Image (tube, rainbow, N blue to C red; front, side, top):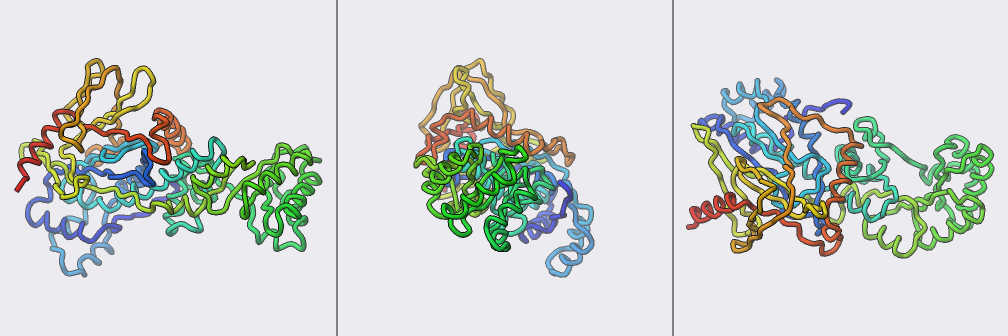
Length: 481
């Protein structure tokens, strides 16, 4: 990233009051384990896309309080002098493991695990959640849109409709992770290497005395990147004919056949078919047709099913805000603590809502792949000291149903969580955005098509090892009243 803003004070106030309380009661240095996970996939989909890790890394690296911060907290009148002195030298010295960005992920499994002192682990909750929740949400929505386009390029056009500057920038980055070929957000290119792209606004066309002059001038200025917006006045009567004239008079004499028109309103199926016919008859068979205008995965799918002659899409507000499901719903829960001898003690949260009952303990996450097809078919949560032996049959338990268990054979496994920080030191190198995008596409290819359906996707299971299942059952029994 080009520069790093210090977001230390971007936290819920109760993180500070709890930290002050931990320090004063002698619990501040107790080692805790927290899981960051989510409970349901946005839009009723079959999987989500993990994103936001790079923001977490930059945040942890810059975590510190300055004198202005301390003076502000002193003025609140509720923090002890000892706590303010503690914050003066505050740094993160714990451990973090995370699923790499771009990984398909499923409800109930940790996307990120924190092992740290109570004060440190609790304090970073807010920023970790906001980073992973927002960027995983936009990455998940973007990937649905990209898959709907069936290989056609999708550009993210949403900055002007984003929820603030950070929403625009980080949303653009998340969209590129998930497969968008470009973004209209220049800063996302500057900071992260997401390719910036753009055409023109209707105001460009209106600024000139006539539409043809606007198109001709643009082609003269940007002959190698000429995409003309043809719906300012009338698409078929003036827009497309004037675009054809400009392309023929300016580009073709230079030997340039790469060009495009953009449709931003009207019946996109009808207009694209008519425009395609006009362009082909004019000899501009290589001219592409780009569509925009409040698109999402369902509209794109419908357009292509109707035979729309579209080569690329620009998607804005419904992508950058994930309009149909605007909240990811990730949570951050305590799952274990260490006693004075360093023994890990599992902790569980009980709820009348079954989906809110946590899976306790310091865990590992494995993904199993079928040896015959290579496809992923189940994720496994197990205790941190367990290893999966690919050469042996594996019995797993469904955490939702006490009676449901299954034995798996002929598979190979992969550990999903990678070390990010060890004792406060960064041990992870964030990949380039293009490498994350390539990784993401490859991992999605390892999912069954049934899991990738937009409606009623096949349920991908996240199961428990027998050891972890028994620990959970024992804790549930102990906590009954």
